[in-house]
Image 1: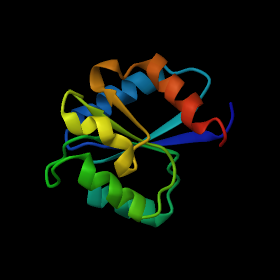
Image 2: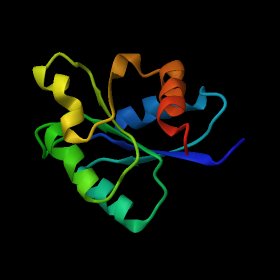
Image 3: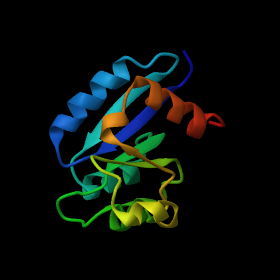
Image 4: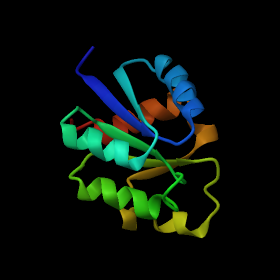
Length: 129
């Protein structure tokens, strides 16, 4: 195995951590570590602490923020330059069409978050790492 890929999940539903951890265990060819934060503030503190973060997966809607259009720019302003993916139970809202304008690298429906899609995203966005 190569270096560990550190995935930060930001989601206000703790059950999502359990579901993602289950999917990550099935991913082959990568040594993965999952860190979970329930709020954007906690994620910002983690990033500021210097803890390794290779990729951020953030829920579209969090408790105190409207949607990714407010949360992702905060993560970018904190200095995170790695890939950020927005995960949502629905990508139907029109603002998802302009996701790149807010510093988002990719968007993914939570129903499509499986070992195959995770491995594809890791290869696509972390190949140069």
